[in-house]
Length: 579
Image 1 (cartoon, rainbow, N blue to C red):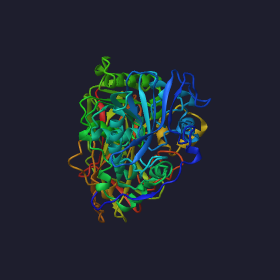
Image 2 (cartoon, helix red, strand yellow; image 1 turned 180 degrees about the vertical axis):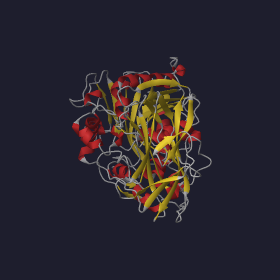
Image 3 (spheres, one colour; image 1 turned 120 degrees about the vertical axis):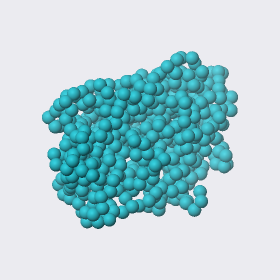
Image 4 (tube, one colour; image 1 turned 90 degrees about the horizontal axis):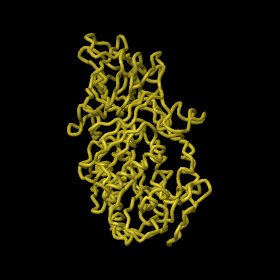
């Protein structure tokens, strides 16, 4: 890069909690026989598995990394699935990963423990005639080099590994990728590099823009999870990228941040993408990538839970196998007849609908509808109020929010992208960090929420009363630092505003500015009598996305004014599906 340089900090060895049974460096090949268990709490292997441990792979710049390969005990050439992430390849049996499974309520017996964290399980895939490759990427554990965080370097390195795998005597020459979170993000970067032997990808929820999804969402330096990611992973012998220092050094989008966005228009391989409405880290990025990749053969499934239970659900694993059988094995199984979009509609009362079929998202029967804010009645109406009425709150007071309600008299379903179009003013301040939320209320006005994981224990409720948003869905949220309101005219659409984040435009005293805020996509059903509440606040309404990370507090002071009606007719745009 030109004069914009990555910043690095010292890495450190893998701590005991992140160490698994197979962490020690022990190159060699052995056969794990059917019935083998890595530890008593894990699933036994259903078939013999050839295990090649700590295989050295040299990247284009001479750096050597190490990978574990699990493959069928056969002379037949097979395709291989790659799991690309900075989490040690042997962490499946670590206390850390077992703890995460416990947190969400997945039994350890659901997997063999040979899988990478958030990756495909060799116990299943080898039986189905696939090999799995689990690399320790650049700079991680015993692999050489300095590690980077979600970067085009990931794509170049994975390209080299894919092409190396394709040449192995046991490989058919077809390579796929699968996994959630980091393992999903790395697929965008890898596919954009167009390795010749990459035949299909399966990104299962992941960011697609580090600036906008991870560290500076809405232009706010909310780095709690980035700190956990940086300090709680990327363990190795050299250096790791210091994303926190980069946020401080480069608060506006520049070349460094641009290189942490994959080149979507170069992603042309078949893609089976999985998303949800509820993952406050991954949702925006997954839908953005779905919209923007150039693949002619792309499928989207939007589920109604959290990514880990969804990823390891046996029915979903079988569904993925059909996709990979088609594109990695060439099986004529009519996968192409699968609906291009399968979406869910939540009702937060136990009546969710899943696997609803459509040709696109939002479906063609959805119409964007403006619901205007009325500061006088504190309601949302489909006609703009003629009278101008401001709604205001004092930062740090109770309440430090204003909200607006609408009640639905008939069955109403929202499917698509909400956005807020607001006229706002800061008094006694020159900037505003605004948080917005679309919330469902029952007919009695009680907010409705839904736990997204199998763990429904008392501790799960303690964690999610405020925060741990990936474990409980509370509605569709958005945020924007008002000085970062400048829209990207190239990428913005009527559905989804996109901001450049390349300039700071402070507010002058008495200035009313027009802003657009993108909210998380929704699939949400309202039954007769139920209500929608739209909240504007100076406070983070949902808290942190994961437990035990630092919560971002908005940089706010003075009085926030939301103007409504008249020439400042603020509105909430909702995607209403035809009945």
